[in-house]
Image (tube, rainbow, N blue to C red; front, side):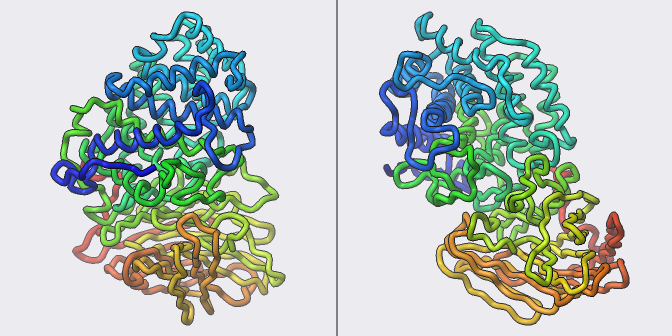
Length: 636
């Protein structure tokens, strides 16, 4: 099924050409494309693809609930002025799904079940479409819907963003005259306070679980709940946090619309823009309205032009093309339709400034950006010349739920992530990319599993990990497209030290080169990934793989390697880069014990002391000041 889009509007949207009409066209296309997979009565949408661990019936409910949320934004945003068949389809499904006698009735809400997730989407959709859907059901039909949703009361959920599914479901019940537990709503809202790390950032549950769930769940649901409940006091608190979050979050998107590829549930794709629209919807956004639309439209256009949706009009389990390693056991054929949250902006009236103001450039289109985020332990650096965004990770490891016996999760435990490159994942992944490994004589490589955040300051961050007798302390200094990594490695004698760069992928084999302590992989479009050993290394290479990367079938990871570790503690310094065009110039490096001095190409001098807790002092070049803007304090 072909996606038909309106002509681009270069006057209103000089960066993307996209307008509200484009968003409506994509929404209509997605909704029409799932119809052939509906069961009798439209209670379930059983899409093709791998079933989740929850089973076919739950997956079918997920297909209904997540596309219903998209339909709700489309219906409510148009004031009900949509083809009547759209409303009738989801009304029929609601009636059939909550009828216990129907052959495709929805599974009951049980402890820890996927149905609890989908109940929240249904509750939100019902709230937004109430005048056109719920209120037009018969009293008996409304009672059945309420009875099914009321099954949430008292159910156990994972202790993470799931607590908010109860909050919004029971809030809808409160507004619909159904049974609900005010104490359960309060408990859910209180629980997320324990996970607020400050500066706009939530961890998804206890620990260091920083990812897109911060935006598309832990900001989204409380703000929408406050909107449902009319709680202005809490709403103001959530708005202030969302504002601070968006000041940083706007930088996570490349010039071509690609989001940084980090964390779980990446198959939700353009759901990444939901917090941007939420800011506009709640009045909390620090962004000019034209910038909100430019970033959001850029992301949706990015995926629409790269196979999502596919030729059938469906969202598959993957990033661009199908790629199972970006999924989780809970992912089923309809899971990608969490992307429906991207269409939250349709709730804004057509005359809202986010739709009517001319697009304004994204931050990466106007200047290089360097941003330190102490709460998640991240450094972000983006470059105007190529539009690439990179995220250096010294904090988020999803430690609370990591499998102690399995391989480290590549979407959390790498040293860096980016908008234009993804980590190697799945059974075919070599595991070399963006990892400092200490390789024992027998070939066993150390694993970074529990990140110990140590420092985060101006364009600098540091962390450590332990694995048996190995301890690695890593400090990162970012400069333009380059990351200078300084490693203090404590290990037995005879081990090798290997520092991997970004895994670069494409549909065709890449151009590979290595010489001395430098290695490079380059795509046909000119994007390159490289590593250059600057101190302590003796060689370099490039490792290739097929079918191990979400960005393309063929992938390659450059790395630098050092010979036998002397035992005790040694310092290694490398330049890691991902950029369009030439390799960034290397800094001058001087190492004296644990003190590393970097003479950066622009003239700044950076002195890093690799103590137990590394520290950094930066001396700007005379007359230059700080060349990169601190994006946390950008004028808006």
